[in-house]
Image (cartoon, rainbow, N blue to C red):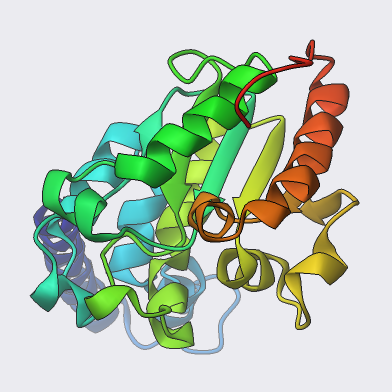
Amino acid sequence: MNDDIEDKRERLEQHLDTIWNFYDEIEVYVGDKEGSDEYPDFSSFVQSVIKEPKDLFLEMIDSSNITQIGNAIKECARCPLSETRVHAVPGKGVINAKVMIVGEGPGAGEDACGEPFVGKSGAYLDTWLNAIHLDKSTDVFITNVVKCRPPENRNPTLEEMNTCDPYLEKQIALIKPEVILCLGKVASLHLLKKEGTLSSLRGTFHNYQRIPLLVTYHPSAVLRNSNLRGEVWKDLQMLANFLQLSIQQKGNR
């Protein structure tokens, strides 16, 4: 895609050179009419029409569909995380999902297979969705703030998250979820551009680009600390009520 954009730019430059030479020939023939209203200044006209070129990466993002975004993520080498990954993890789910789930970043299992939320955390997340009757195959898109695994599962740096932001922003714009469910402190604080604790962000819907956003704990944190299960259930009930979903009264949450 970047090659196509470069080709277009080269053709545009060639056309401008041709037009410029033609203008010079006309000027020689009719004389220099600079300052005349009858003969407009060509160079000013070109400058007014040809704006400063956009960043090629952002141009690619702007014109991509969800499949192209996924392919770009798989080939991405814009930050050092690409040097240590096995697979990039674009995300998985459906367009026009009711819920877009956003975590922090891929772990070892996700890095190995290229899919988000596999293993124990993924299985546990499935029980959450089942408890409020969300079907992962029809209602949900799951992804992360960063698309490559940080070494040793460390927190992604601000620079790494900022580098991945255009991918996530475009995914959200294409999927148009009814609500975003943000998992964990790192992802939540980054998306909301806030500081503080995870508990301070819970219990209310935030606004992310006019989309309601709800914060809860990451499944891996709840697996480590079962005392958080009740708090997550409160968040899931809020999500279910917002989407007008029925709630499972009993089950393994």
